[in-house]
Length: 124
Image 1 (cartoon, rainbow, N blue to C red):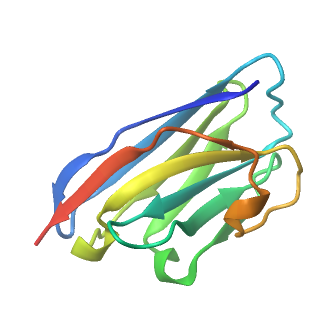
Image 2 (cartoon, helix red, strand yellow):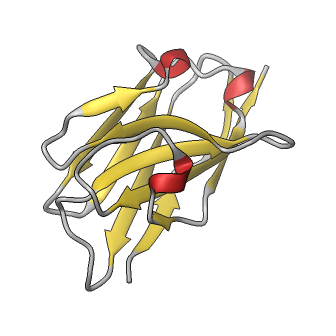
């Protein structure tokens, strides 16, 4: 099994920054897994934010490009999401995900493991 634990969420004013972290563990976890971030706002479906391959190839949702940066440290089995220029509409629970495939996908159905989520609240 694989465990994913997010941290770094909190309350921030619009225009501010936060850095989320996700630590992966478990006997079956491999640094070859794709890692991703998703978010879910109240009353809305979970949506893709960003993903990163084992070799640090990345993909982003259009609305996050230029503001969010995903990165990973394979030695620490940790993935990060640096969020800058935050907006009130970025308020959501942010989830870390892992996929046993090396191929990136934005579809929530194809991610195998999920963290419990961390709340990000952006005040106006």
